[in-house]
Length: 134
Length: 134
Image (cartoon, rainbow over all chains, first blue to last red; front, side, top):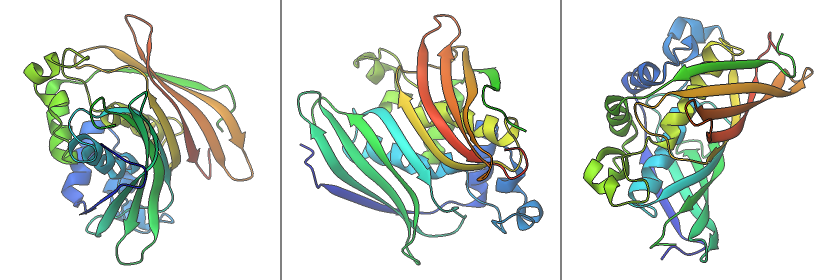
């Protein structure tokens, strides 16, 4: 059973090919994500990963590992605090901060950290339900 | 310039192939999204679209159309109120509910509605910055 204070972490990174694939899938072909010359003219200097693509690591972890199969995603709050770039090593860090056993729901803090700088790129809370594990 | 009360809407649907592609991209291969036999044993009865894939329509609209190129995504809150299914016609409905001209930021209500039933599947707010259009 998931408990308050339980944690899970996983390292990950994205490639430009994955950003391109997400652009095709979502239809979000904003040149900020795809065009290095365009991105060089912005405050970001180089192409940034779609925020929602970055956040999708949480969908994977919640649905596959923590708490895993059977998880129902109820709500996600996401602050895109710093841009994420391709070929950078990030770590997704999750921590259970609230449990409601009667409703089988939990609030899980969801954070993405740049492993090299230690800075937080994405911060938010996921609200999930799992009838057996919560 | 974006104004409080401005709205934008766009119809869309997803295919099972797109759900499969998102599963590959995100790594979220929860059988609830991919396996019809497994999904039949759950409360959802058939495979549901990943919530984050459904929400990605907002990334597209904000980044491409409303307010469009140059949009910086600051925050998204998403309530996954009802499951979304493939081959169903949905409409993304966006409405500007707050503007901060000094900071060039806006809060945009983001809603996904089932066109046939009129029910709300996804509800939340996007917080965006655009230095020219807000």
